[in-house]
Length: 270
Image (cartoon, rainbow, N blue to C red; front, side):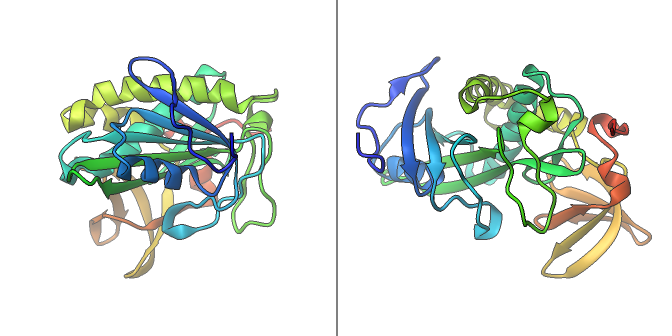
């Protein structure tokens, strides 16, 4: 199979899901998008051994060497369009549970799309949408996890899952757990009707909840306390002026907040 060619017949996975395994692609999200525009019915995972143009939020480059997990889920017509941003929280909950299944302790979800461990980034999520030719909503959720290696020279700390678990972790072992947990979380979400349950699970795994944070958006940078999430998943920032609701922004954990792990408890440090 050509390393850049999308498989004509993705292999069955479970419960109607299929998986297309690729060697080297520009981006698994782009491959999933192309599949959606070609009429794929969804319930498809695209998994690659390596990406040449992996990306995160706002088009930021995502280093994608072999050995780590690069996977994108395609779900067609999952909910009303206004609720589509919630699927990122569904994926975050699934990823946190998958890592816990492998023995992970002390991990936290950083709003809106990162998995952290002891102040270092382990994984990132990227949720995107596209309208299919028959005018249906297709949601694509990309997941990049540093399973065996983490990039150097970034403006933030990064670590690998192998470091955090103190044992080797294969991308495929993590993917099987992630795919299972994502299927379960989608069922719990119930096209948006179950978002309160997803929100509660996300907050139970939130990094820095209750601690000091800094946010930056077009209005500028400001600091306050991470109060939680509102009913739609927007960040609640408490400042001396009151509680501000933030739709989209970059969030930075302060050193104090980095020590606050899931459930608001301080995570262990060596």
